[in-house]
Image 1 (cartoon, rainbow, N blue to C red):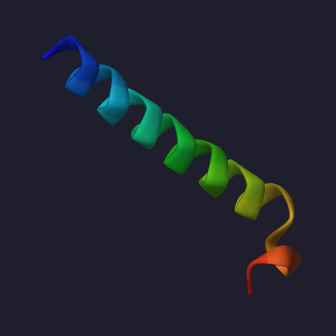
Image 2: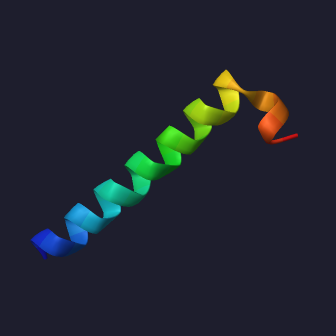
Length: 30
């Protein structure tokens, strides 16, 4: 159960980092 929560957190964190990357350099992701 803890592992599932950790994986979900990691997925949300990766998604947030990707959004931050897009906002910083939008030309990379048109």
